[in-house]
Length: 277
Image (tube, rainbow, N blue to C red):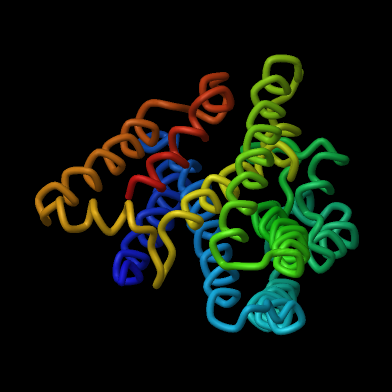
């Protein structure tokens, strides 16, 4: 089961983000770790939905949303409650418009709040206390829309293989639309923040993970992948993993948030590296 690799991928993404926040001058591209998480989440969620349909010939949409709710909402509410008493200890510009910030967090709209208020992920001029919740907002938007989409498609699919094929095509289409939205938007935008925060432009790593999930599931894999498993030994698998990790490290050390390259190719490369791993 490939589940044993998941913790390592999660740790890699988390480590990159932490290095970015604590040692930004040394690891200027650590923010790419977020896209590792995005790709991983898209793969995991799509895999679980497809495998649920493969076993039960149906998808429990209400159960899916309940699991996401209990996994996400209570920790977010707790974070806000724990954070608020400490707002008196930080600079007042961090808590400017605190009502809007909290509404954005609890409504999972922090990314759009930052876009509307002119916020920036790296801003030192308009800092917000909950700016880092932008990624959770994008994730929740994906969960809701993709959960509904796969459930709807499952109602019209006669077999597991048919659903996988349709999900593959839809994932590929959504990936192309989102990727080129970021590609074109970054060439035209005066500020990269709107392209970075937007759910439309930054959701494509999820769909890249979804594409992978139609071929390599958590518990179920295609015949083609099983053939590769039999052909490749541990050394070859480790070399592929190392190649993906090397790409992430190169991005982490040499690409900054303000580089156009990050938006044209950087996030795509980080996502592909996560897929490879």
